Image (cartoon, rainbow, N blue to C red; front, side):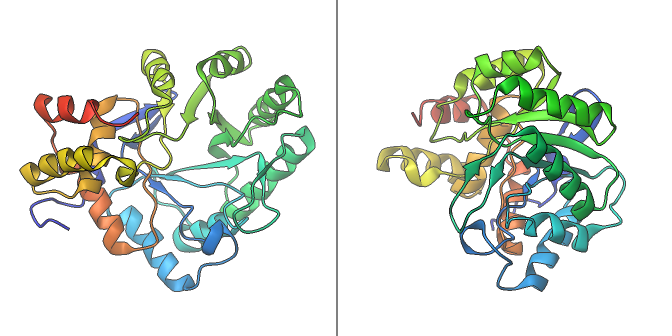
Length: 291
């Protein structure tokens, strides 16, 4: 990691999810603490515990996970590493995908499944209420209104505080907004992949947290584009990955990047991206990349 950058998530600034959950904008995605294929336990459980503990030491107070990571493993490790949780730590989790095997993901938005999944996450995370509960996918085989209605019921029962969505377009966000306040949208998005630009713009206008998964994808850039990123990185004494994360932080004030890793070194490098201060020229260069 470049030595002139400090690993401190507080430098990323603060965003208030749904206007009442303040978090530092650079968070952590806890998918990678599981086994290969996001399935089963990690090879080194103690190392995974140390990474999660280092997360909060670096000022990160927003952790994103899901019941399908493992399945269940990520949530269990978070509780083992961090419970009782430090004040102000926000743990977001998700339901709506099941895991038949390594690398396999299937939608399940049946109301009974979503309710069972929520109860399981509450137990594993050792909390009485989940601050941010996200529908991992809208199941095309179940009426969306039934899925949304179940989440509203869980919120009204005090089991979840706020509701978010994942991998949705603007119209689906609008549809869900007829049932509840959409607190977050979690879509694939990075400097090389701008498919969901319109969703970012919608979330920015509405003050909805946009949580980009797969926030590091500089390898997808063409050779000339990679050189442009590297020039910006060298200017700031940073790595290309840090520039990619800094671009997300500068792209919109509602973006909350959640880079995930099972390595403390990579965690510290990612967190230091909060200290990369891109100027207008840098942003003009980077905005022209990707799809």
